[in-house]
Image (tube, rainbow, N blue to C red; front, side, top):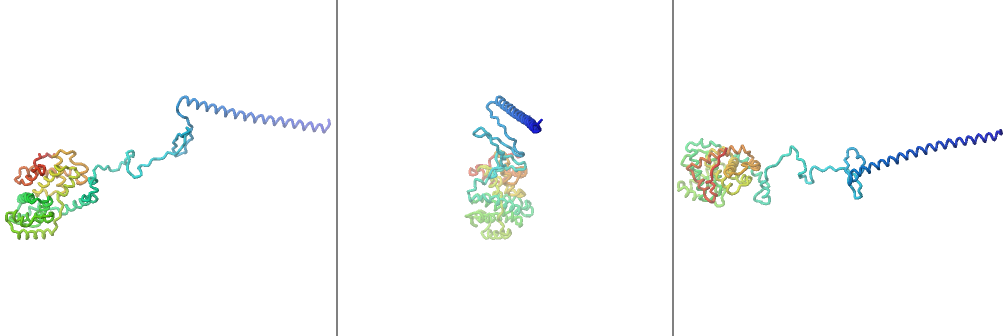
Length: 385
C-alpha cells in the first residue's frame, strides 16, 4: 500500500469518525431541547385548563393571580378601569380627626372621664352682665368666704338677758318692716347677718334688742339700696321707741364693733346659682326663697353654711313639686354637694318647715301667701325619707 494513500485513508476515516461523533452530540442536544419545550407547553396547557375550570365554577367574577405581598405590609387589590388590579399599601386610619374631637366610630378609653353635667353658662356667653367667663371663680371665692365669716350656732347662749325666742320675734318683725319699705331681698339677709354678728361679740340688754334690729336694717339699706330709708323712717316704724340720736349712736357702735366688715355671702346669693343649675321656673324659685327666708328665724340653722341652706331649699322644693330626679349631676357639680350630703340638711330644714305651720310668727308665711309670690306658702308639705 502506498504510504501517502494510507495516510490519506487514515485522515479520512478520522474525519468521518469525528463527524459521526459530532452528529451524535448535536442530536442529543436537540432531543433534550425538544423535551424541555414539550414540558413547558404541557404545563401551560394544564395551567390554562385550571383557569378555565375556575371561571366555569365562579361565573361573573374576575380571577386574578396576585403576587405575594412583602412581609409586614398589607396589600389591597383595587380594580382599574381596564379590569386589572393595582396593589397599594393599606393606610391605617388615625384615632382622631384633625380637630381632635372624638367620633362615634372611635373607641373610648377605659380611664376617660364621662362628663354628665351641663354647662349652664353657655347661653349667657354674649351677656356681659352674666360675667360667664369668671362666674365660677366668683362662686368659688364666695364658698371660701362663707367659711371665714361663719358664726357660732350657739352664740345666743352667751347672752344673759335675751334668748333665741326673742331673736325670732325680732326677725319676724323685721320681715314685715322690710316688706313695708319695699326693700331688696339682699337687704333683709344682710340685716339679719349684722344682728347675729353683733350679738356674737356684744352682750346687750333686752330693751336694746329692737334698737339693734332697726339700726342693722338701716346699715343694710345704706349698703344695698339705691334709695335707702331715712333715719326718721325707722323712728316712725318703731313707734317712737328710740330717737334719731340713739339710732345714729348705735350705728357707730355696730360698725366699730364689726370693724366695718359687712360683706358676707348669703343663702340667697347661692340660691340664684343653684336654681339656674336646676332649671327652676319662677314658682319653684319663689318656693325656695320662702324656705330659706324661714330659716332666718331659727338661730340653730346657723350650723349649716349658706350654700348648704340654699342647696337644701332646692332639694325640698323639687320634692314638693315632684321633680325627678331630685338631685342631678349638674346640681352636684355646681353646688359641690352630693345627694346624701344635701339630704341631711334638707331633712332638718323640712322639720323646721313643718313647725312653722303651727308657729305664731306668721310674717313670712303671710308674705308668700300672696299672688305676687304664687302663693307658694300654701303648697302642701312633702315627706322626706
